Image (cartoon, rainbow, N blue to C red; front, side, top):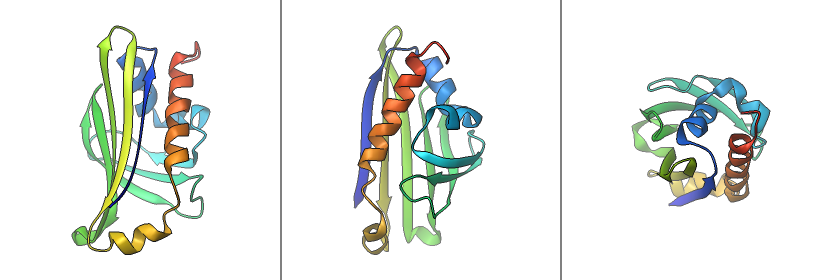
Length: 142
């Protein structure tokens, strides 16, 4: 199973981080890892992402789980579970104004060993996403 993950501590309240993370119209202002993103971020909605790591391909995803100020899951793939990608975003706080952010993506299914061969190393993009979110949440602009 191929997977990627990133974590970062952000010096901002969880509500602020969540608002930035779920405001799809603002992603192009702070997120340098995407070419384009369309849709809406709420439970059951659809999101289409074009990542800079693979700009020639659009990834249609469903927001399959959504717990405000805690977590969300985006999933997509081939029907019947032949190939599934699942991206999980999680935020939590141990203390006031400090947010722990994590994002992971796992690829599973019968065809995963074949399909994941064509997926580039996404770790640099995951780490960059975290840094961009941190920069935005800690800035006065957000």
